[in-house]
Image (cartoon, rainbow, N blue to C red; front, top):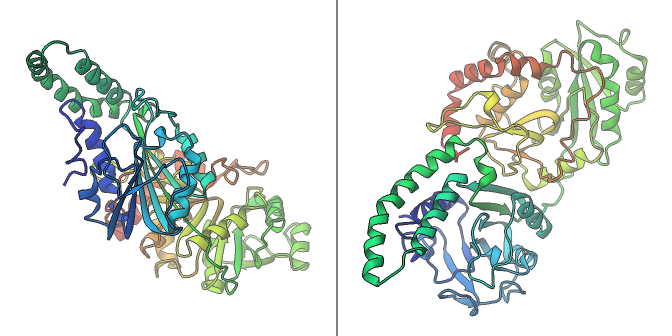
Length: 493
């Protein structure tokens, strides 16, 4: 059923807005569970839809609202809720936040009444006229929403823009034309019937025009928000943290800069491994400052077969497959809190790959993977998902035993993706049903690329991206393992 089927405000001039909302309410079905609180429920138009997916639905609203109310619990959403802590598994609040004069209090209370791992789902208008005056206080940008939710304690905040410039303008025209109808009831009815084809056509046309506008999300009519309440799990002191990296060529002369930034971390790794190709280096031809780090037992330098950039992880798995492994690149100075933040996120998501920076893999309308250059680089999507692509530049934490059995099959990875270890690692986690997640970081603190001087002349990522090699490697691996089938079932990009 359409979630908005029973909504009394769904009309011939505005059904597009409800269809767009329905699309996301259906997409979010996996989040609905247990006890659901509908905060600002009005006359509970979505109750029939939600009750199909939860054990118990409870509507909450106040008596001063300017619409019909059929609340199970009467409460002022600007104040403390008389509901016990850790009560609900899911909170929904649709088109409510703009009507609250103390939105931060509301978000903190919703966080309190949610159970650990509970989900909040919000829908908030952005470009819309004043309504339900005088109780219409705010309009929120995505940045304002993320700030308020973060301050309340929420994590994994995902904000999705709804509609764009053309939908917003044409909807305003529809509402304006409706309000402009004057005269007797009979005359209004006649004019409304004459306008219905116009309303229908522009609601069919608006999404098409929005899709042609590349910056449509900046002109959103509204936003949906999904966020989680995550309480940190107790630290697992039985697992060691292994930092692992490699280097090559002239970068051997500057890799100690990256290593020193790892040695200065607030949370120390139990071991730092530097892997070098045995045909290229030995203890006699590496810089003295590197040898000193090894001799002082600050790092461990090991030599192995030259399997290119794969050296950062593959040989480490031979030694520490049951431990937490964090891979690092050799051309960065790392934020001193990075390991701590990666580890804290690991405690919240112990089975998930955690990265400081990641891309969002995007798909066409038929769910075919788009070329690499069309993905969302340095994504702000902090929800764990299969379509998050970790990039090594800001550290990637791999939990124990997270890879598919072929991870160390040298013949396969050197033939399918010889210069793209990150693509191979992503494929191996996908095949093992492991999601990936980007660190929550509104200010991009941990993705600032503090690159070491004179290290980018032959950077591998530039070659792979500019020459289209990433798409070639993705194609080969996807064909071999049928990876598209794995990701196609996931939600819209």
